[in-house]
Image (cartoon, helix red, strand yellow):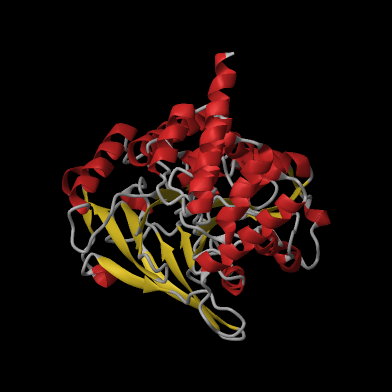
Length: 486
C-alpha cells in the first residue's frame, strides 16, 4: 500500500489562529488513532500540499514585505517538522504547489498602472477575458488597470520560489526545480508512482482570481515523461484550484486542463482551494474511455469564516492499493479539543470513500505490465552502455531490475564489473552465486581483491566444482599468497 498525507490551504486565519506546535501535535495524535483503524490506514509514505502555504498580505498593508517573510518562516518550520516527524526528514517525498494566497498582491499591483478614462478600450469585456490579457479590472476602485512592467509582475511569485528552492536544496528529484517550467516532478514507491506538481496561478494576481496552468505545461510534462522512457503504475497530478464553482465566481480552473491531463494518462488528481474534502470522477473519450479520480482536500488552517457552512479544518489520507488501480480517501476533520478524527457524514458517512481509475493500457487494450516494460527498457539501455564502453552507467540503468537470480541482466552487470576490474564490487555482487560459473568468478574476484581467506573458504565450500577447475583456482590462490609474502 501507498499512503499519502494530503494537506492544503495552510493560510492562517487572523480571527482563529493556530500555531505550529498545536497543529503538529494534533496530526501526530491522529496518526496514533488511524493506524489502528479498520480498514487499514498505514502511516504516510508521502506528503502532498496542494497550495496556499501562507495567508499573504492585503494591498497596501503596512509592513507587507516583513509580514510575508515571517509567514514563510512559519510555513518552513511547519513543513520541515512535518517531514521530519512523518517521513524521517526525506523531503523528496514532500510535494508542494503554489496557491492564490502565495501570489504577492502588492508586487503585482506595483507592476500595474491605472488606465485613464479616455483610453478605455471600446470592447472592455473582450480585452479583459482575452488570453494573456495585460488588462485588469478593480471592482473596489471601479477602475481599469494594465500591466506595464512584466518583469516586476513575474516577481509576484519570487518569495514562493525562494522558499521552494531553499526547501529542496540538495534534494534529489527527477528534475531540478524550475520556476519557469510550470510543473515539477516527484517519484514515490520505488519509482512506480510519479507526481506532476502543476502551478495553477498563471495570470492570478490582486485583481484576477481565476486559476490556470501555464500554457503548454501539461503537454511539456507529457513529453518529459515520454523522454524518461519509463512506465509508471500510477500517474498523479497535483494543483491548487478547484475545477468548478458558482456562476458568480471566477476563482476556479478550466476543467479542460484536467481533461488534457487525463488524455496523457494521469489517473489521480489532487487539489485544494475550496476548503472542503470532495471526490469526483472526470472522463475523456478517446480510443477508449479514460478516467481520473479527482480529490480535493479541505483547509488545514483556515478559520470558520473562510469555510463552507458545516465544515471544519480537514485533511485527507489517501491509501493506494498494491495493484495501483484503486484506493480509499479518508477525510479527517477537526473536532473537540482541536483534535482530528474521521469525518462521518455526507459522502464520507463511513469515514472514507473508495476511488478507482482505469489502469494504463497498451495499443491492444491490455493492461501494461510496467515492471516488465521497465525491465526490458533498462536492459536495452544497459546493453547499449556496455557496448559503448560506458561501464559505470550499466549499474545505474539496471538499478530497478531484479538481479538476484541468473538472467541476461545479471550477466550484463557481471560483465561490466569485470571490464572495470572492480573486484571488490564484483565479489559483493556475487555474494550468492547462481551456478558453477558464478562460483568461479566469485573466487577469482576475491583472489584479485586480496581477500584470500574468503577466497579459500568459498573454494573449499564449492564441492560442485570439477577437480581441474578446483585445482586451477587453488593454484592461483597459493601463488597470490606467495606474492604477498615477498
